[in-house]
Image (cartoon, rainbow, N blue to C red):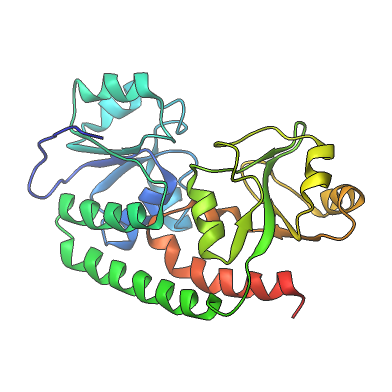
Length: 259
């Protein structure tokens, strides 16, 4: 982000504004130090029940954060609103991530580990994730990438395109995004989808909760495509979630090939 912040050597009152980074903090063993989370920080479930909620990622409740007296706030450029981050930065150290690639995610883990005095644990996590990635990458060397579309919304239809972390995860999982010529999260027409002829259509569980009924709707548009409901958290949650993402991608690749 090009900013410098000063934080305690070992923060004792952390507020996390991003679900995937909240999950990471708990993975690193900061059950006591994390005092505030968003209503979307649902993992791990037992901690979600215990911790104070400070609103959503896009509409945090500033007064609720003030009441927690944090000595560190952790957010993300895409997930959080700039104006709210600027306001919080007047009062507290606010560390922000900006993640679009797997390398960004691994760097974030290491930086957060250093911030919260869990450097060794973070380094071990990064090494494990990197090894899993290399193993999956090796498997894909002799297999052609499948042309895919990744849907995140219905009415209108919206997909993930270039310059997104989801697109990076599609590549890692062995897919070729057919909307790479567009940016971010474009609205697309059924005619455009049909013309691009995806081999695989992936319907994410978030932010729009795609269900079985949507499979038939898209199958009518692309009768030759393999259409699957997928775990959106595997594709969009960075941090410790990557540990389960790679095995999931391996399974999903097999499902896409029908094997």
